[in-house]
Image (tube, rainbow, N blue to C red):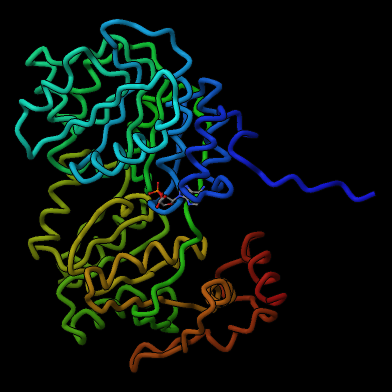
Length: 417
Ligand code: AMP
């Protein structure tokens, strides 16, 4: 007998009938992967680190279990906020508040939800908070104002959600977020939701979360076809000279150059400076101050080339970045997509150049295969490689460099491809 396939339903995740019914009334047949992974953990009281984009069903993933937790509490008069959802913007506050309202519609006794944000007069929000509320959706700035006006008390908050945490930490909001967090009781459950995890979000996550459940439903990245990709065959010893040549010949105003290690960022930036190109290194071990100075110089056009590692470049947003160069190839195809995604932003057409040598040819083939796109090999006059005759994966034996185990694995994978 074949086992019967039970479709996954909201009630099988541990949600009560009124909540499951509200979800199906919205036309949601089955929980999304983000919801399946998050809801049971949140109901069990775990801290959660959820990496998910808009569209993944992330809001209901935390909204449903929050509502269930609140509906199971004994009633209090006046009501004390048992849960707080912090969001970066007024628009998101309204959207999340609307979803919570709809999902709570069958709960009995009903819960009182309050949605507070800046950009509108504070008085109606103070009125609405009379008698307390069970659940608050708030932007940090307005929440602080309301606490200062004695309109809301946060001593009963047992669960905190930071939604779109990467945007909550955008410049100018980090202080407000820190102030808002300082108003909360120390013992509580924490949920951090973010589409991306640049270093400052990772730091926040490790400060905030205690043994969190990791849920990652970020979609597999795909390379944007609008980005023009070039692969240039060059001997590794010639790369810096070639880079200088391309910067000059292409009149590139700004270029982000990726290398494999922290040491290489400094080494390559130093060599470029020696060749008359204004360049600086960006890596994870720099102080915040040094990092901010380098980025400001690059944005202002005082630097032409920024030489960075993958980690250091995550989370930096530089509008109008026309060119990205893979000086060292990325370790994984996903890293490649992240790197080249740094160019051609905001509708501008971008250019991504990869330097490929005899030893890295096989690895680059793997990247091409994964991104489903061939990039024709080119050579630049005056920089023709001497060792490309050895490029076929089987020959190898490049003078002065023994193949590592990783190289061999890459070559085998490329051959199988
Ligand atoms: P979010 O990722 O929270 O911004 O949600 C994106 C969209 O997915 C919203 O329009 C939701 O109504 C919808 N949605 C959330 N959960 C489900 C589900 N289980 N099935 C189908 N759609 C859903």
